Image (cartoon, rainbow, N blue to C red; front, side):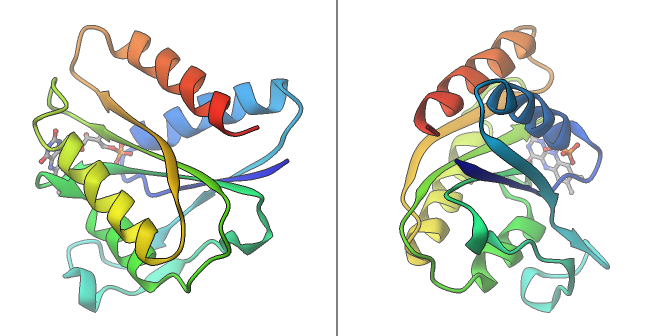
Length: 155
Ligand SMILES: Cc1cc2nc3c(=O)[nH]c(=O)nc-3n(C[C@H](O)[C@H](O)[C@H](O)COP(=O)(O)O)c2cc1C
C-alpha cells in the first residue's frame, strides 16, 4: 500500500514521530513517504497564509496527517493545508498531534477533533488518532502505542 504521512513540524517533534511511524510501516512492507507542509510565514492568520509546499495526497492509498498543537488547536499551518485541500476519494486515514503540555486534555483532544472535522469536510474518514504529550514522562510509551495503533489501521 502507498502511504503518505503529511506533517507540519516547526521544531521537529512531529516530524520525528512521523519518521518512527514510517520506519514501522516500511518494515511491514508498505511504500511510505513523509512529506512536509511548509509555509513562508507561520505567524500569519490561517486565511492569509501562503503555503510553500503543499503535498498532494492523491497518489496515496492511505494518509496520515500530523501537526503540533498551537494555542489549544491544530497548528494554523495544518489548518491552512487541510482547509485548502480539494475533496478526496475515500481512503484509510489517521491523524496525530504532538504537544508540549503533559496531558491530552490540554489542547491535544481539541486539535484532533478539529483535524477530524476538517478531514471529514474533504471526504476523508479518519479511522485512528493519537496524541503525544512531549513533556509527559511516558512519552516514549505514547509514541510506541501510536505507532502500533496507526500501523494496525493502515493495512
Ligand atoms: C505558536 C505555538 C503555540 C503552541 N501552543 C501549544 C499549546 O496550546 N499547547 C501545547 O501543549 N503545546 C503548545 N505548543 C508546543 C508545541 O505543540 C509542541 O512543542 C510540539 O511538540 C511542537 O511540534 P513540532 O516540533 O513538530 O513543531 C505551541 C508551540 C508554538 C510554536
